[in-house]
Structures are given as C-alpha cells and as structure tokens.
Image 1 (tube, one colour):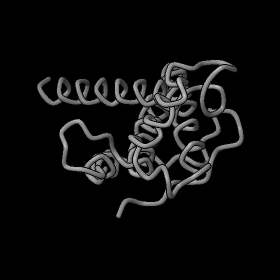
Image 2 (cartoon, rainbow, N blue to C red; image 1 turned 135 degrees about the horizontal axis):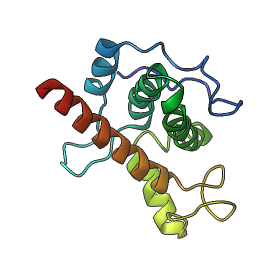
Image 3 (cartoon, one colour; image 1 turned 90 degrees about the horizontal axis):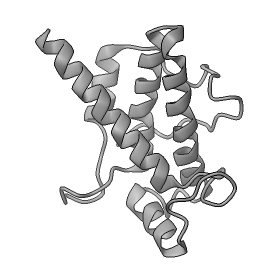
Image 4 (spheres, one colour; image 1 turned 120 degrees about the vertical axis):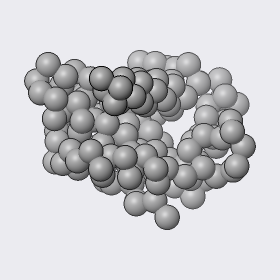
Length: 147
C-alpha cells in the first residue's frame, strides 16, 4: 500500500520540514507506487499515494534553488488543499475521484478564493494544477534524458 499521507502543513507553504529530502530514485519510486482505485485509463489516483509522490516534485524544485522556490510553494499550496480534503474524511476520499465528484455535485469544482472547496480552493482545480505539474516534470525529465 502507498505510504500514509503526511501530517498537514500548518505553516506557510515554504515550510520544508514535512518534505522528504530530494532523492531522484525515491521520487521515481514514489511515482511508480501511485495507485488507482480502478483499472480505467481515466481513473484518478488515490489521494495519499498522489500527494506523497508530488511531495518529491516539490522537493525537486526546492533542491533546484531559490529561483524555483515559487514553483515549490505553488505545488505545496495545492498539495495542502488535496491533503486537507483527504484528512477531513479519509474513508470517503481514498480516491480523488470521489472528492471531485462531491465538488461537481455541489457546484464548487471551479471554486477559488473564499467561494469554493477546501481552504478556499477546490480540490478539482488543485488536482488539475498538480496533473499539469506532473506532466511538466515528466516532459522535463524526458528531455533531460535525451540531452
């Protein structure tokens, strides 16, 4: 099973104690251990495994230096939203699909600021941002591999 979700960060997103130290092999292993509640190609990952893997992405950008801390902070702020939603009801929100479904049913899936979702941001919106971040890192690593 994926490692449990780490405790929610209560400090500013730049607080690094909750981040694993950056290790490329550990990042790859974390992404390879992301699980999905169904075999459907459109399935969203389980919350805990996805949050764990993306913490390594945040650690990667923290490791790259001060110029990339804004990216690290953006990832951490969105991960906090995903983690807060999960921790509010872990049994009901094992997979991100159920939380996105809740937001769609409530009409809060595009929420931002004070109008939507967890901590003012919708999980759906944060999930899209984190999927884009994952796709960016994948593309970056593929290009570095060719270079």
